[in-house]
Length: 456
Image (tube, rainbow, N blue to C red; front, side, top):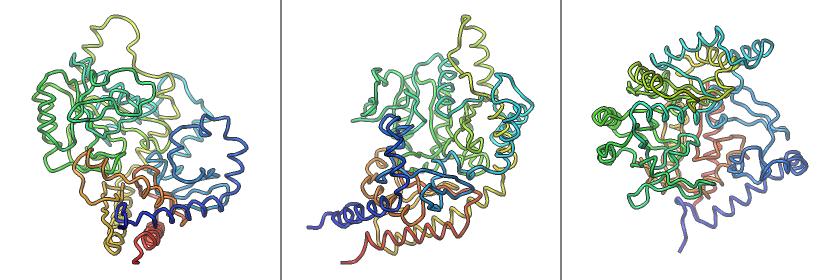
């Protein structure tokens, strides 16, 4: 009997993967030679261990990137739909941001003092995301970590409620999973000696009954959630889910933290702005400064007052929040330029149109090949998932993940000139992405499926 993986004959998938890997390796001799000569100074040969997750035989080396195109040192021109895994969602080196960085570079890189650009960026953060009281961090991981510290300080409670399969950066407290209905440390955590179930409780996304049961114990300081589950096979919220979270958090005295770091793709103001969510704390990072490392976390007026009261009562000493290079002038000029000149309604309209075109094209090709897959989109973020859908929660998302298929398709698309994220088939559409680029990706996807789903 033929063994199928995501509807594909296993032997055909393996043959395709071998052929695509060989084609990739043969086409990038300069990158291979450079890596062999110089990469051993890094642990495991990469400067960031996540880079090992790319499925190609070896990494390319980037020579330059502009707009939605990357050029590697072997001369390949690549349509970039990964965009730094959201970090460059508004395109590589948006012109207003690049100009602002160049100007600031001659005036100093960090002072630990504010600038006029800081004041402008704060005003623009309010205009884009709402009248929060802001703090600036370097990464969304830091922003989420500090937001949790605030939530615990103002509520006096220890736990955070997160959703099974969630991703909020590398915040230790959120690295839990559900096993037989119990919150447990995620398998594979490096060097983690704490029982994280003392700090967190995991529920399934879209399950308000589970959430209410967890909150009823009275020890949850905050619900920390993305509006849409990402960094897994993407899961959309069911109707009424976010309204239910808001009601339950209020009823049980917990804060609601919305992490928009990935769902900023949803439109102007992120998913919160587009859908009218009402968080107590708002977090955004990655692309908010146009590719410069920056994140922001904001407190509602009520939570800000509660935090200030708690801060006034605490003993003298370090609060344990903040990092020296955060809120530096380079971040502020990039934030100001990106929020004002790049993160515009016009650019979002273009991104949405390109994403809708991609969604329709991928869906059409999946149907034409009778593949048991589906496509999901949130604004400018699109994923094809190698399983039927829609998915309801993190448990279903984990089962839908098909690493062997995803790795082979990823390399096949790259060999045809299109780069998607190495994680969960994610694609982003930037203001610089053209219809021609979208159509090239759809054509490459079709060519890959022609081989994988060829009729016997």
